[in-house]
Image 1 (cartoon, rainbow, N blue to C red):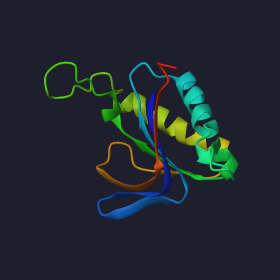
Image 2: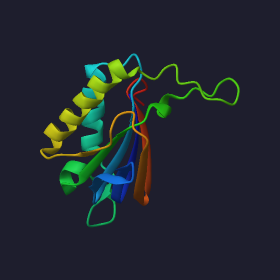
Image 3: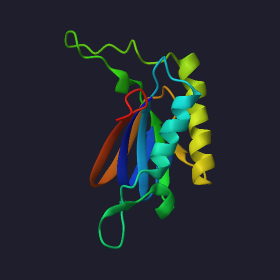
Length: 150
């Protein structure tokens, strides 16, 4: 699983011109699921997202986690995070999981994040054409890949 994590002061997602979800201070997470992903990837990535200390403390240092600030989370599925641009100019998405595999994993990720955060999170709709708006706070943007645990 690959995630682009953005610290936001607010974010929202619209589908067909209708507001689907919106959050205030917290994280916007774009999630790409690849064909090799399993439950272990969900557990590892969920723990990283929840405990990553990227929010400012009283001294202005990035020392607080999403849990610490009791922030919100908006999770958006994005298969294009697994684009291969090695050959030519048209990206290949061959590594991205097919919907029949990706949807159950996406739903498990939602459940894991809600369980850890102990509240509902905002989501898009898997496979929908979505318009995502955000105010990136900082800006702080971090990329994490469960297959490349740096």
